[in-house]
Amino acid sequence: MHLLYLDESGHPCDPSSEFFVLAGFSVFERQTHWVETQIDPVAARFSATNPREIEFHGAPMRGGKDEWKGVPPQDRVQAVVDILSLLADRQLSLRVYACVIEKSLFQKQDILSRSYMEVANCFDSFLKNEFRKDKNNAQRGLVILDKSNYEEQIQTLSHVFKHVGHANGQLRNFAEVPLFLDSKASRLIQLADLIAYWIFRYYQSGDIRGFEFIKPYFARFGSPNSQMYGLHEFVTQATTARLAALPSATYPFPTPTQKVVVPTSVPSSP
Image 1 (tube, rainbow, N blue to C red):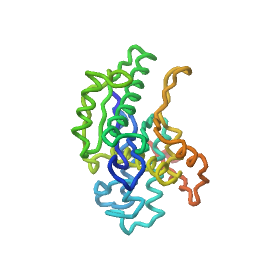
Image 2 (tube, one colour):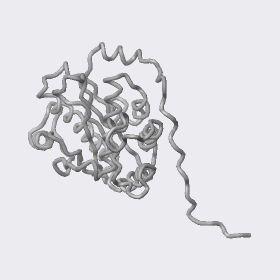
Image 3 (tube, rainbow, N blue to C red):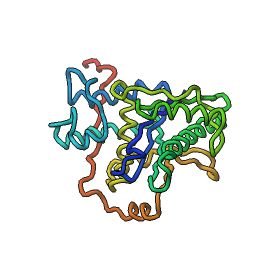
């Protein structure tokens, strides 16, 4: 089974922001433990006695709020970089999915449903493509999200998309309706939060730093003539032009912390 962890950034009804982002990543079920074990050591830098109390949440980390108050900016930024760099780990095979909506293009009540439809349909197409490549690899998918006010709406959308259909067809490869977890208890939801937040920062504020880390890992699959891409944008031409003209970051992200490789055995003395 493949699991798709999602979170949102922005709000359809918030007049202070122009964009809404629903984003996250998919991972094979057997890899979830290994993702978590890569994130926990980052948390231990900030609480050696109880690293589970540390929650990686995009906005508080950038702003130095909540449990991140008093943590030096360079340490907060390094933590973000080290977690987002997990997307580059080929053994984990993480794939990013996102829908970005410029809110002026949609009715407020349609923003969440459209973004969920795009992301869920792309993930469903990935599962279908895996089966096409290998008839013995009939994988199912499950969507997991942070608990929010959208829970009932997304449950309803998922049921409709699976049993009735949506604009692009039907969801045929989902094992169950979406599950909702407390982000405090799930490192993988926290990773999805960071992905959604830094994609939002790119479109809303022109902050390219996190997006540069994420961009190479958007899902790509299918045939050359009908390749699917994990990023779905609904933005104005003005936004496209603004983003294309962005300069390089004045204060770019640092390189990821090099992981310490612990040898599996100690060589015997000569």
